[in-house]
Image 1: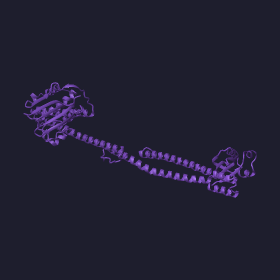
Image 2: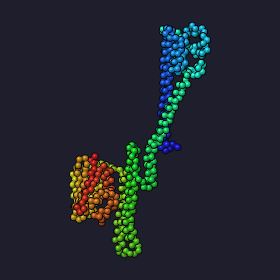
Image 3: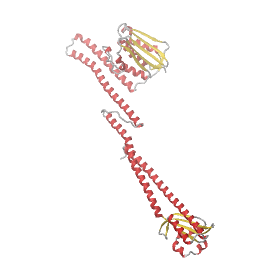
Image 4: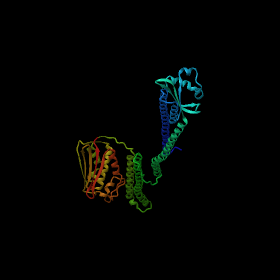
Length: 468
C-alpha cells in the first residue's frame, strides 16, 4: 500500500500535519482553559475585595443592612456567583457552629478551609461540589477584614456550568479550525506529493521504454529544484544511450559492409577457379588476390579488436621517459621508405635531446598510423614532413604531407570509425579505423589531436602530449 512515493509522501506529511495540528489544538485548549480560570480567579478576588469594602461600610455605620444585601446581590450577579460574608472567629469555629451555617454551608471541606482563611490564607479551587447549590462550582475563600482585623470569611461559589459551556465553545472552534487545517493540508499535500512523484513516474516510464528499445521523448520537467536537475541529467543520459545505440547499429552495419566486400571477392575468385572460369595458368594470380583480401580481413578484424579494447578500457599504458628521435627512427625504419616509397621525400625535424613521458609502443602505433596515411595518400614526387617540438607544457608532433588533401566538409568526421567517404580518398585502401584508434590512443595519454587540410594541397595532423 505504501510502496509508491506518492502514498509515502502523503502519509508522512499528513501524519506530521496531524501531529502538529493536534499538538497546537491541545496547547491552545489548555491555554484557554488556564486563562479562563485565571480570569475567573481575578474576577472573584475583585468581588471578594468589594465585599470586604461593603462590610467595612456596614460596620462603620455608613451602610444599612438592606444596602449591604443589595450590594452583595449585585456583586453576585456581576460575577455570576453566590457570595457569603460570614462573621466567625476561631473560638466559635472550634466549639460549635450556628444553625444557619450548618443548614446552608454544612460541607466537609469548609471547616478546614475556614480555619485556613481565618489564619489569613486565600483558598481557591477550580472545581468543588456545593451541596447548597447542588452543582460543581469554582470556589474562592478569603479573610474578611474590618480595620485590618480578620472577623470572618468571604465565601464565593461560581457555577462551573457557564464556564464549561464557554470552554466547550472555544474547544469546538479550536477543533473545527484544526479539522479545517487538516483537510486543507490534505489537499495541499496531495498536490505537492503528486508534483514530486509525477516527474519520477515519467522518468520510470521513459526508462522502461529505453530498456525495451522503444523511442522516447525528452522529459519536459521544470520544477526549479533537484528533480529538474535530475530530469536534465536523465535527458542527457537518454541522448547518450540513443547515440550509443545509433553508433552500435552503424558500427555493425559498417563492419558487415567491410567484411562482406573482401569475403565476396574471395568467394568470387575461388568459385571462378572451381567452376573452371579461371584458367589454371591464372590460378597463381587469383590466389595472390585472395591472399591480399585475406590480409585485408586480418587487418580489419585486428583494428576492430584493437578499437574495442581501447574503448572498453582493457588497454593499460606503460609510460616511461622516451627519446623522441629514437621512436621516429623506428617508425621510418618500419616503413622502409627508400625501398618501398623511393619517389617520396621524408624530412624529420626533432632535437636530439627531446624526450616525452608516454607508452613507447602506443606512441609508435600513433605515428605509424599517421605516417602510413601520409604515405598512402601522397603521390610520387611528393614530400612528408615529421616534426616534434616543445610548446609550453606540451610536446607537439606534426605529420604533414603534400598529398590529395581532404575536403572541408569531411574534416569534422575524419576521426570517426570507418571514415573513408571522402571522394578525394577513393581508390585508397584502408579499414577506416586507423584514425579513430589514433585519436583514442592520444586521448588516453591526456593529449589532443586535430587535422588541417586543403584539397590537392596536402594534410597536417597535429597531436600534443603532456610533458609529464
